[in-house]
Length: 226
Image (cartoon, rainbow, N blue to C red; front, side):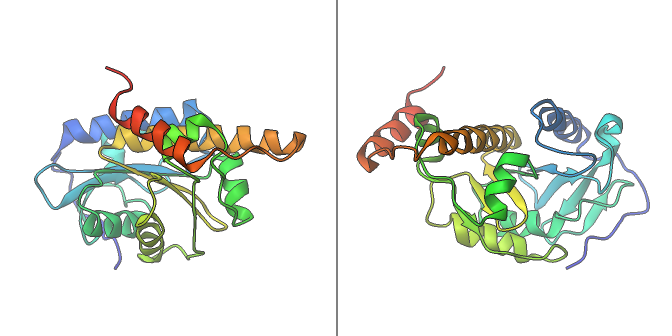
């Protein structure tokens, strides 16, 4: 599948495109992306569509017009920007995991360092148990350009509570019930990747018992916050 570029801007789903454009500021604010790398996407409620950042668009210049509307086959249906090179991966996830409504991709440095080693991040922090329900897993190596990355994301997260996967030699992909949740997962992934890395410079981090991980995850997912 190849994402095609529409010839006109009809301005459909403008409010959602504005929202997703604004969310990209969290990627730069939290140091998760370099230059034009990375992207946020979100499913359009009630339609077989999603919106995603245009390929190679500078973050400082990103407005709603830099967000392209695509169908679930990865074809652009509205917007003047060619969609992200990761569009087919996002489309595959949306087609195969209906509960996912938002996705993020970054090359954040600490987490990507783990991906370069093809090493899962072990669950040695209560914050990891809260957000990820266990280790952050490694997905397979896959080339950009078709839905191979999407297949790897879906297969890796099928039996995991984690909303994040480290794709081998590539970077971070996160999912969520909406784009904001996927952004939060991307921020948390980099945070714990850095902390666990620092801990390993001092010695071997202590594991958390699985029963305690389960308890922490249940509390955070069901009782934490307002």
